[in-house]
Image 1: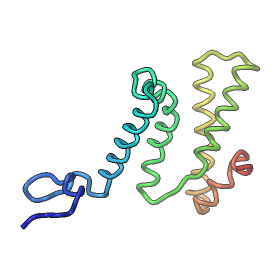
Image 2: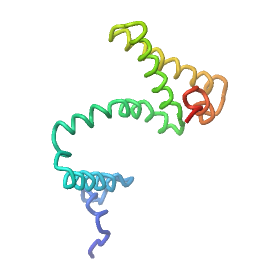
Image 3: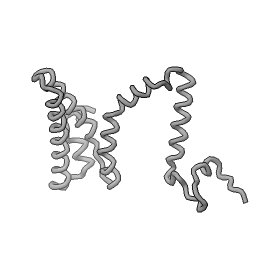
Image 4: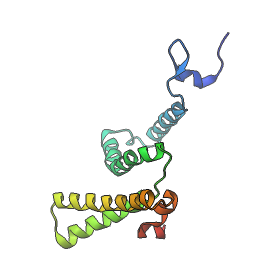
Length: 147
C-alpha cells in the first residue's frame, strides 16, 4: 500500500509515522521558504547578510513582545494592550531623553518602569477586581482608545 497524502508525508518521522509538525507548522515553513525564494528572485539584494541583519534588528520589539505574550495565550488569556503599552513606553522614553537628558541606563529603567506599571495596572484590574481581560486590555490605555 502506498501513502498518497501529498506533501503532508514530508513532515512524518520515525517508524511509527509520527509527524514532526503535528499542528500544521510544516505548511508555514513551506510558505516561508516559498516567500523568501520569491522575494530573492524579484529583488537580488533581498537575501544578503546586511538585509537579514536589518530585518532582525527591526524585529526585536515584536520578538520580545511575542515572548511575553506566549504564556498568556497558552493559558487561554488575551492581552490587547501590548501595542499601546509599547507606544506609551516609547513616548515616555522619548520625552525622558529629550527633556531630561537621561543616560541610556536611565532610559532603560524608565522604560522598564513604565511597561511594568502598565502590566501591574492590567493585572490589578484583571486578577484582583475580576474584570474581563478582553475589556480591560482594550480600554485601559489612552493610546488604545484612538486605534
